[in-house]
Length: 479
Image 1 (tube, rainbow, N blue to C red):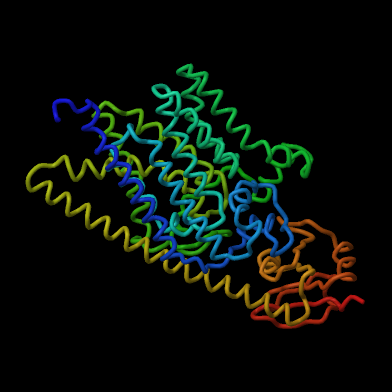
Image 2 (cartoon, rainbow, N blue to C red; image 1 turned 90 degrees about the vertical axis):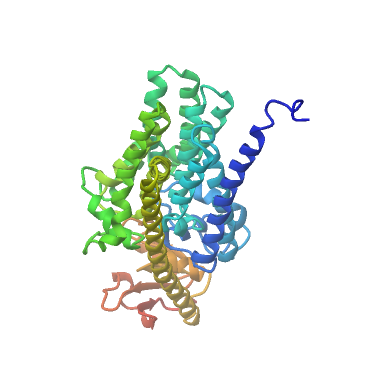
């Protein structure tokens, strides 16, 4: 029987073992989200903007120039008919687990299954990845798209079917954040031209264009043109230019979802140690790959990780840890390869010492990630529960749908209370004083300020109340 077995038979168990490893990593990623982040976590500010575009819970919030509607498309299968946040969280957790599996699978044949599984585990164990896995935010999906696109790009010359992965990954990135997609794919575009891979180049350019088409069309419909939308997006983000935001990104490592303005002390060195180890291990992984004669499959994702990180480290005046998720995902491959080298290359006692050192480092890394995640989840849970209580207080004051909120945190509180939101100035300006006063003659309108804050001129003669820690000015009841 052994003599007559097909020649490919011995390879089947190995392939199946690799598939099981990747599936196990993806399943554990989903489970960790459900246990550590928990489905009951309410929607955050940006999430309410994306979800409100299709949700029956509240009118659509203002959609500013930098945003893209990819996240809205992602959540539409659930959010368009259900207002259940736990259901949406479970849906996104499962979907992100599937996406991680597909993203790692795109690299099969380029790295051993154990390296891929280790890379997936390293990326999935970051507090940033776990926190944003079940959230309606775009950056993690750009990371998944980057892994799929770059991996399939490297396989496309030998396997024409991989072009579908190039197309799908680029399309996903462009749907979520068109400009991020361009930054990630700059090295791929250069390589495709230099190597004269015209078919791959056309697929890549066509997918980027298809994914960004809605954003471009909306630029002409709602912003007066593509240049105008790009300029407005730059203004909203603090006018893009030369900024040294490396220290800002470091300040956000302690669990700050948005560091704007990014002031205060740097986090404890233990919280940032993994951040400094990341480029060192990635460089070691590249050195190992060069020595083994397989430099391209490591150098290309490192180049894409670099271009993906550049705008958020040197071109924007604030920071959010989620901005660097695509770079972390691409760096994880080289880091995993370096760790494999550290535990397999030494011999004798050196191997024992190396394995122990890597194990201690990984254990400390996981402890830090869990501590920051628990702190971040707790703080965000408290903030979003406060929005829920504020919405209930507004309802007791008679501010019920249909209604309109203006002022401090009007967008998220408007979503929680079922009201529309409006602003006459700032990054979310979408109305005028005359329009707000006209609306107050038809439906309940309330203006929100922080304690000691000065209300807008149109609301100064409205009845003042206190709800939670906010001052609420309610317009006279319309007749």
